[in-house]
Image (cartoon, rainbow, N blue to C red; front, top):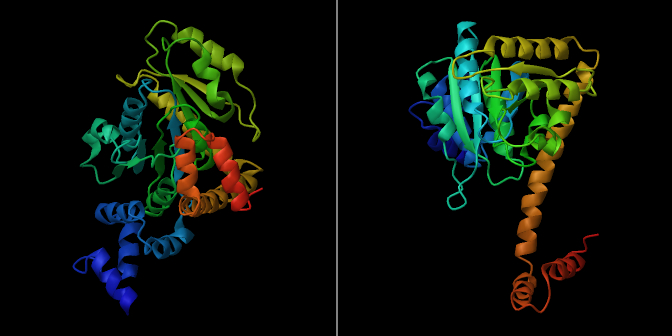
Length: 330
């Protein structure tokens, strides 16, 4: 009874007197319910576990596209154009824009939501900016759980936009069906194409702002560097100008081709199994990381070792070695 009373308070008794009603409202695509569920995820509300368990059997229908790449390549503008074109096809779209966390508040910068705000009144488009949670890959457990909420709400396509810095692009491979790498000419030398394993993870490469000088050369270089992936998919290269919509139809056609490839692939079951393995591992690693981090910080010798490093009596690696030995870590 106590748990039910807590549920009444958290879900607002005026709107969601029972969990089943709340779950049903998410499944029906109610934006208020979706927003509330994702907020509960971000607040680490324990009731979310039950909600996700009830929703899981009906997930797996939305096609999830990760869009990433170096800053400044026009990812958000590209996504805005994708939303417009997909809506013309009567598709229901969700967007999770993963913003860098504020180093002070931990909050999201929300810039992407502002750039896509023209779609806020469309009931068939749901856009949510989320903090990266200071994760090195920019993808927290909040992202994975929020994807399940959006998937269960009846969306046809979910786009995940990542921070796109350093190694962060690689993490997106684990939670999506297709990875779109957005690049542009005049960002410096060709290292942007090859760094951080971009050539290995990309399913579709977009040379955005292709009206700029050097776009043809970049297109040719990416095309020549593309190799057959482990799942036998050959990466595709598209030139776009997201400001005026040039090439967006071709990009959508390429995304559709990727979806058909996965659905018709003989290795479809192994692809899904691999995603599930990654998700289970990620959940365990997240939980263990948090638990073990707290255990280290609360160790009786931790603060003493910090002070010894502070006074230069030892270096951080020596301090870490001592703690590992005390915690019996191999």
